[in-house]
Image 1 (tube, rainbow, N blue to C red):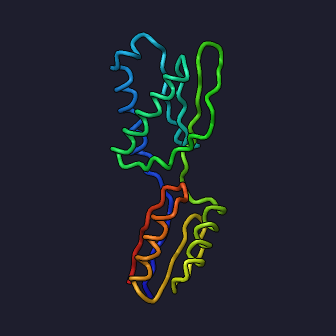
Image 2: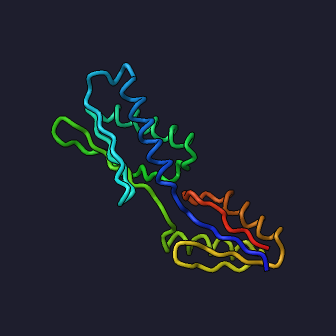
Length: 163
């Protein structure tokens, strides 16, 4: 019986490369000359810490970070930009959590979407992935298109397609 997995995994090495490229670009930019800027990636939590002297510069740094990470193959939906920057002394800090793995709520939302679609497939939640099985590969491809078309706000990958 054909099946595939829906996962939300993040390649930390690509993210690290994107952060390093962002650091290099920011240090070379004219509008950041002489201003203290700090960009760090914490791989244990997956979180990026950005420090600059104003919120405008924080926004510019995050824009560069998102565009560079897209070039490295990291989906921009992996970044949780909902947290507001906070002032600490003369510096403004922003913590950007990076989503890696499917949370139980998101997995339930995806399985509900698949079941409501009326396609003849079964979706099972297995830890941090969703296994979708069906009789026809065309149904599985329809599920992939359904998930891509739905605005779930998640960086999803479709792996392990088997006949």
